[in-house]
Length: 539
Ligand code: ADP
Ligand code: MG
Image (cartoon, rainbow, N blue to C red):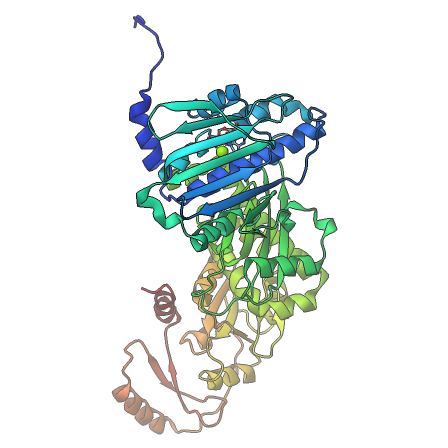
């Protein structure tokens, strides 16, 4: 078709501004995260300029100070970073959605540091101030030689005012005049809470009421070779003050094809997943984003604790977008691989230690095997099976161990297991008399785990010791005399059939090698396991 006209779309600020104010973030407390991030950026920039030789003055003690004045109803965020000239205010503040952070990174991209340490990039953060403030003042003085300090003010309409002001020191004060409907933020406890939540690991000191609230160099920003076990344990305590010590940890560190750092800890898991509430925390450039990592970390890895920091995870976007995001998928795969590699490493280097830990990590490994094929490919070499004698085997070792006695007519291996060593003791003893080995598979996900293995491993069938198919599947004939005559056997059978409530049960009267047990009640493996699986999925 013929183009009739080309042009630029225009925006009416007076219409778009209320939208930004109201809907930019669903959570109003985010304003503090944004303004403190800007103050941190301003501090990082002056540091960088000094290192590039573009600023030769004193750096001083770089820090961000947050002050609350209840009477004046103001919150002030101050920094001694690069500050702004009047022209820069017009460029960076008056132009909504123009990011000075992105411009800075672009300008110095040849310095080889990339965007390291600079947080901002949307050019919208500043305006989140209006989610809670009816009026905002900026008082700022640029680091530049002879720069005049300036004052900017805007009451949330589309009109601003720039005037002259007194200010001795380099840097910026952002003064929020808190709106009536946001007075909940004029509370020291609340403010400290928000600062600690989002700013606990920001790279520049954040001071509130004369106290530094953050740890500017958390361990995930350091090199693993500079860290000792004590450092990892201390950091765990910092994250989860009431948590029990973790079993071990993995230091994540990758910069291609995406950027990601972090430390993941293996906690001691209890048998029920519920109540394992220590969550993985997601950061972007040391700013806390969320502890809802559902889409970024594979389901089974959400049992881990710790921190992931990645500037490459898209934020503030919808969930379905996140799931489809290529980086997120790669991050998922990377974390899974790292976790599997670490487990394999421990298994290889310290089998004994690995076995000791397996009761705690087994649940997690099995969950991974069930839910993630890539993980299974690695885990099949280190996942352990424990038998009733407390011995541990890998799948391969177990194949060797039982192949003499427990191979059926179809050349399939038959694994036997118990879900309850006490209740099924008679069956276990009976199996042992036949020289069969019995595994202990009694955790809540074992029925799912067994199902997954039957599909993945070739030529095995897995039966509980009281399954009805047991004798048919196991080839080795063991002749045992019943202690009852065949007449008595029939009579006993009738009695038991009369009182049995479970219609799927098979009642046979036979010679159990355990002397006191002439009667055996067995259940079809398939039916029973389906019921178990439903129960553990909460259906
Ligand atoms: P972004 O941080 O994504 O660039 P913002 O809307 O948060 O966008 O801020 C816009 C710009 O305003 C910043 O990039 C920066 O140039 C400037 N700015 C904001 N706060 C400060 C501050 N405290 N000191 C110096 N410059 C600032
Ligand atoms: Mg910003």
